[in-house]
View 1 (spheres, one colour):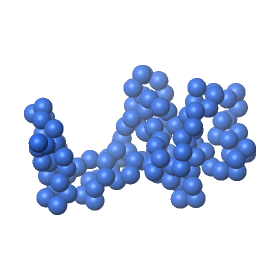
View 2 (cartoon, rainbow, N blue to C red):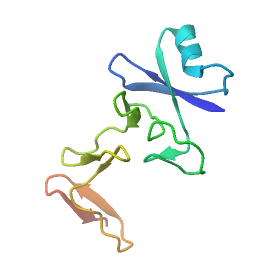
View 3 (cartoon, helix red, strand yellow):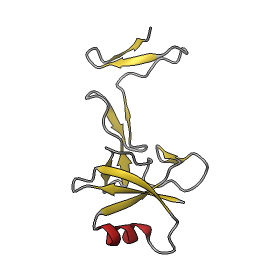
View 4 (tube, rainbow, N blue to C red):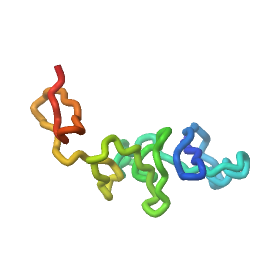
Amino acid sequence: MAHFAELDENNIVLQVIVGVDEPLDGETIYQEFSGKVWKRTSYNTYGGIHLLGGTPFRKNYAGIGYIYDAQRDAFIPPKPYPSWTLVEDTCQWTPPVAMPTDGNMYDWDESTTSWVQQG
């Protein structure tokens, strides 16, 4: 089983479908069939690592609203907050301050660029 992401004219993911492992290039098959641009994505890939030890595709599993960056050959999730920066190796966003690791739940407060404990 393989997964493919449909891209719009700005390389934003519109949908992700489950396909079969094609004996030929699946991206080409879906493009020829639909007239749209498709990129293969790996369900178990996060931050450039395949969680089951397989081959990671394009840094991250694609999701609706993700951007496909052709230069990085990577799917990048939407930027959650203006203060967060992209980590090149993982193509994931990171806050300017690490979340506390004390076992409590936290939310990001963009106005103070800090973590606020829930509850």
